[in-house]
Length: 343
Ligand SMILES: C[S@@+](CC[C@H](N)C(=O)[O-])C[C@H]1O[C@@H](n2cnc3c(N)ncnc32)[C@H](O)[C@@H]1O
Image 1 (cartoon, protein in one colour):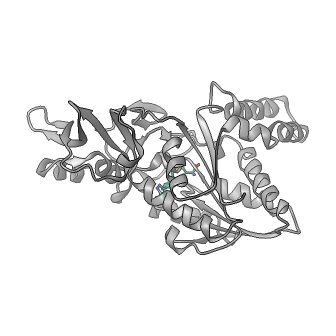
Image 2 (cartoon, protein in one colour):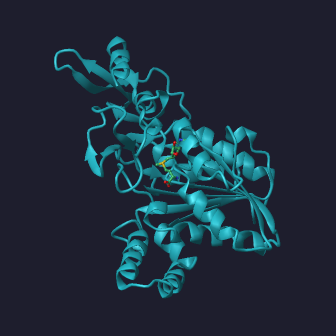
Image 3 (cartoon, helix red, strand yellow):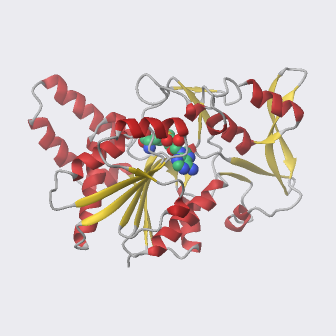
């Protein structure tokens, strides 16, 4: 997108502004485009691998509310992509005739919101504009691969002084390069969450607003619950994990603007610390593998395979389930974080 480059020619911009421009700001930004998900797109998320993923989440949600003897509840999905997970969850819950559920979505991309409205038109889904509009009780908030789609900043300590990464135009080489600039004031919230040993920080500034918004919803009612799934790690040290993806391959994030997905590994330790600072009492992190196994994915696979009429279909389902739970695939890189004010 030439307008991004033209802007940078006038003045360097911060890394997170660059990522936001590439992913969301313009009609030709990445998430406003067609065909980015699935085998023919740039990446595959769990709902595309198997609908068993959504079924297990649905069963987790049902169990959560039934334990509290709640038969009518709400689900709010944030960042619903093409609406696949929503469809799987709603279809699973609708099999339980004694349960009433209203599904809501918050979606940043105008294009994806349109796709969701089309796909889910018969399922009575409603959309909220932002978390500030969410004043509901008995609400389960869920997201899959949302946080890795937030734009990040890079801060680095050079000679004991913090610097921030900017994107600038190199007029000689005629391309984009990055350069660290000294921070005049260390006034970003992130500095309250790092210790003296820390020399590098990769984080999304939007994570503070997001987690605080979720914390407020959790404070609204003890029955409200948050579950998010994403690839990432749980450590006080930050990794430099920013990467571009195009057609399932790693690519440079400073070329092909609007055609490259820009993503990073979420640091769940930071999110947990923000929740704790907001006095959210119950925060847990587990691997996707543990979560799915604990909530019955193997049993569900054994049940589903009995209904399949060919060995080929069974082996396809086996491969899909294995991809979700195998530690060498998505099993341990993907984490499940839950948060609530339940004691
Ligand atoms: C990587 S995609 C994942 C989509 C879907 N959850 C899935 O698993 O296939 C990230 C999604 O989050 C949306 N998104 C990113 N930032 C958001 C925000 N602040 N609020 C709501 N949606 C957001 C994107 O537009 C996109 O729908």
